Length: 125
Image (cartoon, rainbow, N blue to C red; front, top):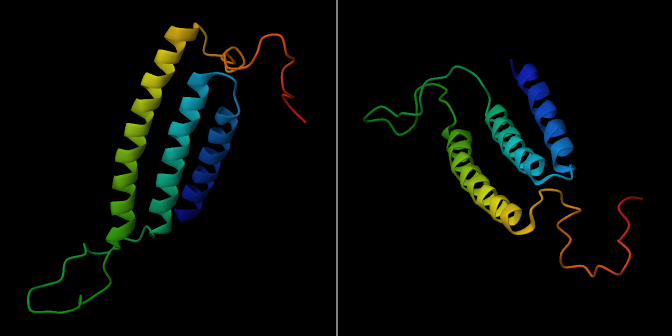
């Protein structure tokens, strides 16, 4: 099970890098969303996927009687989901406003801060 999730995490990272290297803002935003999901799945997979009992200590005991699930990866993933959703919502509004102002979602067409009479910087190596 963990091997399949590790391969899935690798595929998510590869897809997100491919989308982040695009010239269109929408694809870049989708790459950020997939990257957030890949990190969440990575954290969740690192927290072990064993079927253990919930992390509840019985009354009168100071330590659990058996192995319990680790609640830290679950809490980290829950927090990361909220943060990545708010980041995606902010990026969506920012991209929509940039499209309204500039009329394009191509990052090459968004070079309004650069002088028009000078040549473009190198786009690759």
